[in-house]
Length: 124
Image (cartoon, rainbow, N blue to C red; front, side):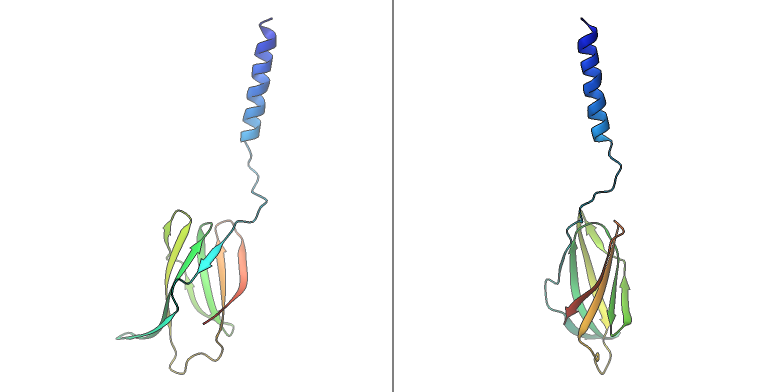
């Protein structure tokens, strides 16, 4: 009689342990939210002229953001202020005297889950 409850208990423990031990990566894509809380501004200081804006990213850990214009890399940013799943970046792009030929920007986000979002257009 003691064997039957012991066998049931062992089976339940085995099922519980095997269900908790899942080393497979998640199949679902993680949600990523990107915001510019304020419009970009042109700033002149003693160092030069800059296009400045704040970039807020909510999602998995961000490793790098690459900002390109007209197929030219303008900035590769890795110095995020992180708090839980919120990543803040203060972007300072050198502003050329004649401006940029194209106003469409391409931003590549590299996040920790090894997913890359490519060619996201941001018009400024």
